[in-house]
Image (tube, rainbow, N blue to C red):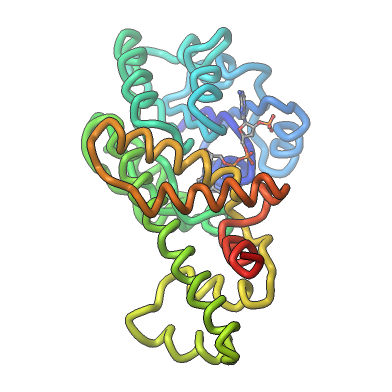
Length: 288
Ligand code: NAP
């Protein structure tokens, strides 16, 4: 297929790479042009000067940028992708953004005959590189049917959750759960250290029981070692928790623990640790 891809960051670059590897004709746009040129040198395809140019003639256009405003800029902004997309084409957004912006883009797309899917991902940089992301989508079932086998080049699970915004809302659930699990793990490990236990031995035992989690299995030992450079950054987590808390204000859900953990992440940012990964809650605890 003829595809466009906008945003070749930590996540977007490997995702677009899987599309090229699968034999699709991919035109890429990246705000910092050098990244697009480097990507083309590695994967083939074509670099574009604007999102609009990357989208021209594409059957599906993908994006993976930072936040709501970045997303608006590359779609409905001047030289945005929507200005270049043909009627009947599909826009798939992998940014973690608000459900409101997903609905806003769906409406803007519909006026141009473009179907939109909000399709945030879980699985991090390694999941993108290995092509094993989890994708949670919202939007039109017909558009999903067209995009699903293409997304499957970099995902092991691609699920339509409901109408526009449902993918983003599912991602919010994911981030709420991750925040709680990481704080619980950090508190447990800090307690183990204070109690004079061998924290790694504790992990070895309790990871076989009811307390186990992906975070415990993949981050437990590095948290004990004080290593916090394993991917998803505190800065990005704060963006995601803000989005989730705004949604909760609108739908009436209560997020008391999430709000508290968000403040712990704010403290890490104030200490200059915004680029550390989310398991750095442990660092903060050992200093409390
Ligand atoms: P990243 O490495 O910072 O990449 C962001 C990309 O978006 C870059 O290509 C950047 O261009 C582009 N961009 C940002 N603002 C833009 C704008 N206004 N106009 C045009 N391009 C713009 O971030 P990432 O880690 O790939 O994350 C991308 C999205 O995936 C985020 O929403 C994040 O929350 C989500 N996510 C990330 C992870 C993870 O582990 N990293 C996991 C799941 C979900 P430049 O190159 O010019 O900066």
